[in-house]
Structure formats: C-alpha cells, structure tokens
Length: 238
Image 1 (cartoon, rainbow, N blue to C red):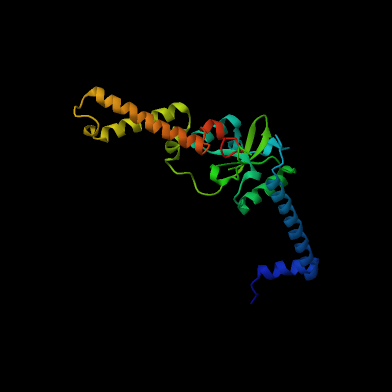
Image 2 (tube, rainbow, N blue to C red):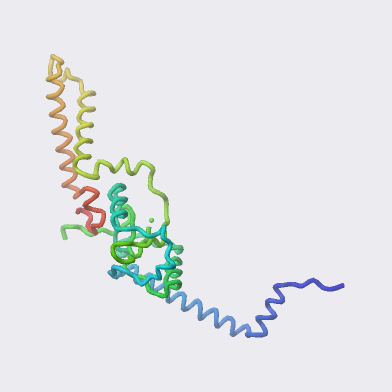
C-alpha cells in the first residue's frame, strides 16, 4: 500500500532543503522590521500633513471609479456639512486597513504618497480657532484619488438636517417657518381681545424678530458659518 502524500510535509522539506530554520526566522524578522519602518514613515507623513498637489501615480493602474474632481468633493461637503482637510488635522486613529491601502498603492506605483486629505464631519478633526471616514491622495489638476473609506455611513437624514446651514436663503426660510408655527400655537388672547389677520401677522413679525435674533446670536456666539464657507477651512469658527 502506498502512503498518501502529506503536502505540508513536502512543503516543509522543500523549505528545509533551501534554508535553515534560523535563516528563515532571520529573513522573516528583517521583512517585518522593514514593514514596521515603512508603516512608521507613513504614519509620520500623515501626522505631519506634508503639502503636495500631486503624486507620481501610474495612471494605467488607477481605478477610474475612485477618481474625483475638487468640484464634486466640494458639492458633497457643502450638501452634508463635511470638511475636506489635511490628515494632520484628523484626531482619530486611521484604521489598519487604510494604512495597508497606502502601502499597497505605494508598492504598486513605486512612489511615496504625500498631501493626503480626509473628508469627514467637523467633530473628527482637531480644528484651530480663527481667533488665535474618506482618505484621498491628490493626483494633480484638482483631481483626487480615493484610497480608503472606513467607519459608519452618515445618518440618512443628515443632508436634510444640515440644509438650513447650506446658505442664508435656506436659513431664512427655516426661521420664517418656525416663526409661523410659533405664531399658530401662541394663544392670541394673551396679547389682544380681538383676533384678526392683522393681529396675527403683527405677532408673526415679532416672532420672526425674536427667533431671528436668537439665531443670529447663536451663530455669532459660537462662530458658526455656512457649509460653503467651512468645507475646506481648518478653523473651528470660520
């Protein structure tokens, strides 16, 4: 009877013929050491946020569905009140998958990536005070290449919730709507014995002034601004 072939034993025998166990361990240690140094270099580059407008990519190897123009990035940031800033402002830890994707790209394209940026809500960035996840790499000519996406998706109603902060017109419409609703629920008898349309609109006017004043005070006090003004600002109150 012939003995069945154990492929793992055969593989080990081939390895043992070419290298000793000590040599194998030494090679593995050297590879891991080089990989660790490479990863440290990537993390340092991300933390330093070295400015660069392009990277030396091999365009034939890029996936076209991951290439975005700055105008498209701006639109999504304005619609969803996101920021598009250098990785040095990111206060979270980049997942290992993102680091692996960077190493993979650098190996494939034989280059070192720089000028990386992240698109995320403001709370995920260390923003500076004006008084004092998607990871992108610039390609050139205002085009960016999406390296990695992580974390949870945005709330399905986020676009609607931040719509009033998109521009002055939207905010004014919201204040008008809130003033109208407040006027409807306010008992007219508190202000006059007679209920008429003129009294209703007069009360509406005062409601609009009150809610508008609170909105303006809140905006100035906390340094808030509209989406199209903050999407690439590194300042908290700008």
